[in-house]
Length: 543
Image 1: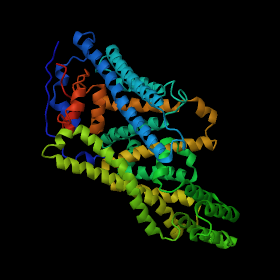
Image 2 (image 1 turned 135 degrees about the horizontal axis):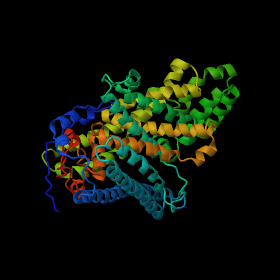
Image 3 (image 1 turned 180 degrees about the vertical axis):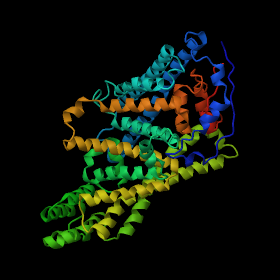
Image 4 (image 1 turned 30 degrees about the horizontal axis):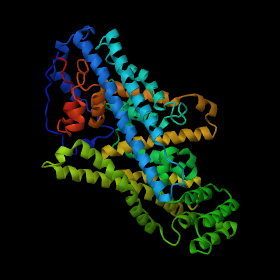
């Protein structure tokens, strides 16, 4: 039976409203208005038979739509990344010559990888919706509302095993700790927001209030970024094998130096005796600078000092390796300028492409110039952040070793590098938390690699267990629970994606259906955008 669907048009939220969101962005007023002003509890029979014809049609339509849309999202995301990697590999091969360097990923491998990732999302969406609807049938929609989505997310979590297809190189053995850890950390952010909503309640235990206190601070995201930077940059200098895959390559590129520079600094920092320091200095002079050059001679002069003078000169070694013949501030500003040039090609497409896809019709309208300037400002701000982050990563250890510590060692590097995390203050508040959570996931991944390599976690245990699947399932359970019962703790962009795949209406009645279509999302160009608070309220669309 055809149903007439109404399209609600409301004025969009203010341009900077969401930028103010942070850890504490979890007000309960949206829910209170929704519950107080609606007649949900009076007019709906919570235990209406699941076998009602309309309800069966709704459930089947929700399942089919969720699987199709999840597959489309997987193809677009993974396919786009693989296409970019393939094009980048082709470009490097042409510059270096077809016979040099490692071969890039083949088209066949890229297609298999894309298909595997899309299959994972299809299986996750299908399993989640199926379990959600079956539990609603068995236990009642309203009675199971508080736990049903968490169970469905937990059951759907093992779909991550499909993300590595059997035809992909290394298929079946690859771990997805980056994705799993990131999702798990996203779930902890949502749980923290849920707790902060109830922090002032008299029913909240004092220990819970104390545990939530750090998250309530205005700059909790900056603290998270600094803690993550401590692990990531310490590993980057002292234990680079802990940063694996594309993220390690990203740091190598934006570090702005050669691997020989990184190896020289690592050897000098880890040297514990004068003899080891002398050997590290001589190796660095030979590897980095031509014989007879000023920089080469400066390092050799330090290496030829007696033990006491050599140890006293250790604070200057950082600068002799990174910027021989210059000074720290000149190197900082010169490096910042070069780093900005490396960052802009990353962030300009990252901001421009979504703006062109989502707002392309509005870009041609009266406010097109404002939207374009906003995207340009975002790209410039993010590029400035990355450039400052990398420049401070080199400046902070150099300054503290000269002015405070008076030596160069592993611990002086580890204590100094967190200051680079302060560069995140350049970003807008909502972006700070995104960066903090992402970097925290990479930091936890690097820490886990260190624990295994140090023998603190048995290698056999790490090889046989799928901790990534367990983390992913736990994170999925928490996120889907919040999606079903605590929708106001989500930012609108995440809520829109989840609604697009899993059903974006009827949460109040627990009769979830899809209202928005792929056509509206992909072709309307953002004209149907609703304001943030309205999109999170219960909407009656089941009648």
